[in-house]
Image 1 (cartoon, protein in one colour):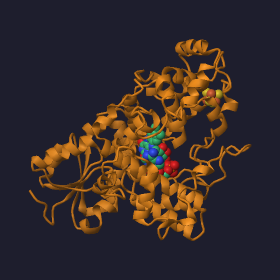
Image 2 (cartoon, rainbow, N blue to C red):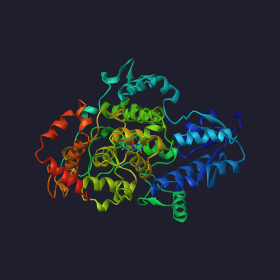
Image 3 (cartoon, rainbow, N blue to C red):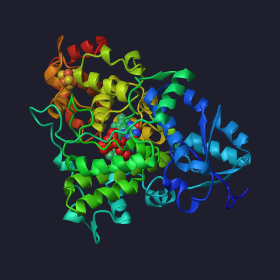
Image 4 (cartoon, rainbow, N blue to C red):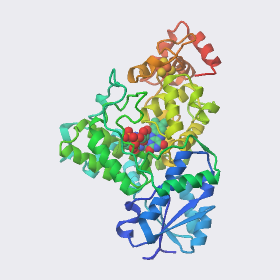
Length: 495
Ligand code: FAD
Ligand code: SF4
């Protein structure tokens, strides 16, 4: 079956912006579906379900007569009820892609279009990847800058260097509880949010985490406001404190744009261009602007394309043979069961907002999971369901690859494991903690410091073969109390 000029579009909940329903498709009707079986399939964070339903219903309101929102048990039920073959964009997960191809075979889908919600088309990435076996984000990022002509001066990067942010990372400012930057944009909840909350209460779906005020943009107009506020007030401080953590400041100078980007209501190139323009009118320094653009045009796009390039089997990698099941307190986001100040704060963030910033994901939660050998696939599932910006495509490379090194180094050259000294340097947590980051033995031994040595011991053969981690193994071999540390950590039940 071929698509006709009046074939409607069926949009998934992460394809809800003008890039999908505007431009050459602006005349088409739009089908939106709330499939309860999809909401129930996994135990999601309550606020994640709220954001998804709110985004769908705001899209329906914005599109007016063009849109029909069907509430059914399954997507197939909705398509059968709709009775018109639809056009769909390539969905954002392997499973959903197979599903829409099956629907096409059944005649329910007329055609499948390339997804327009990322900057670089998938086919172009396949050309870029060619027969490369080693991937470097830096190579990809520079080519993205050239291709989209972002922060370029002819063939050269503006300012003469590609990287301005990475040598510019600072610990949090001393004697200050929060970064002195204006608060992030917070949407005003409306009647749609009220109904979503009411419906979620009524549907009695199993969820994790606390309900709370909606913190993230779910509609294109809100996303533009969030972007404008970030660029005007917070972008100048971006980058400098990107690796820092502050107990009293959950957002620091992060953009909080991952949700609107991942829902498709904000296009990545709009965010990139807004930041570039701020540099051009001297409203933000190059270091901050370059740092932000690197995240969006570099990291985000890179993770998206590698998800497809590595294929569905990537999720099953487990090079470090990590087999520990996620503990109950972790699965249930029971932050109050945790003593370690850094871990307590990160888990509180997940429980109360379904969001923490990058360095808490990587160097607190991911680091803890790596040290304790949590199963990478279980952990991927946890991140995908407990985080409000967790979508299938974004998780495997971030969790299996970057955070757990379970792919044997395809994505990151060394595991992101560190002891309490790193957390102490880059955060203000340790001063108020019951543990001491310098201690690896005793009642107040820091679980990250002691955990680091147990991690090195468990993986010493692999770490000894890597130039970047060999020294950790020799340092471990010089520890006189290693056996006692291992015994203590094997017996540790509380963190
Ligand atoms: P900012 O710090 O303001 O960065 C700007 C944007 O850059 C983000 O909005 C995001 O779109 C993009 N970005 C930067 N790094 C990455 C990356 N590694 N992968 C994808 N996008 C990136 N990001 C998600 O969008 N969803 C996730 O579920 C997710 N889970 C993660 C899990 C782990 C273990 C790790 C290490 C990283 C994860 N990330 C995820 C990447 C990153 O932590 C978040 O995108 C970021 O913290 C979102 O907050 P922000 O919008 O304020 O980001
Ligand atoms: Fe975290 Fe250890 Fe510092 Fe406590 S002492 S906050 S557990 S790093």
